[in-house]
Amino acid sequence: MLEDGRSASISDIARADKIDRAYAGDIFRLTLLAPTIVKTIIEVRQPEEMTLPWLMKAFAVV
Image (cartoon, rainbow, N blue to C red; front, side):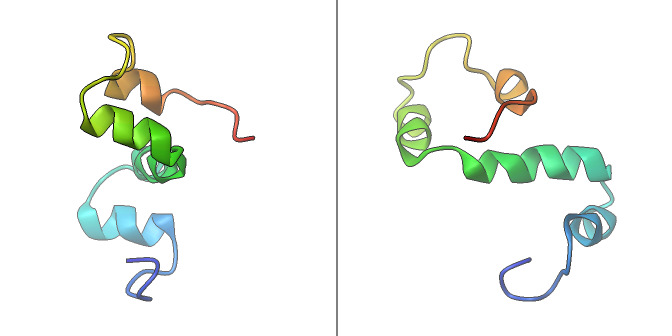
């Protein structure tokens, strides 16, 4: 939605999907996960503690 110009911001996406803006931001942040982490999750090889709630906690972007 952001890439194709249908929405100008995360706030626009949240409004369109009728979800909280903070939640939309948390979900959007998941797009910053390293490809190796995404691959590990897809292959169901992630550590047991690596759950969605754990991933959605604030973490440093380095």
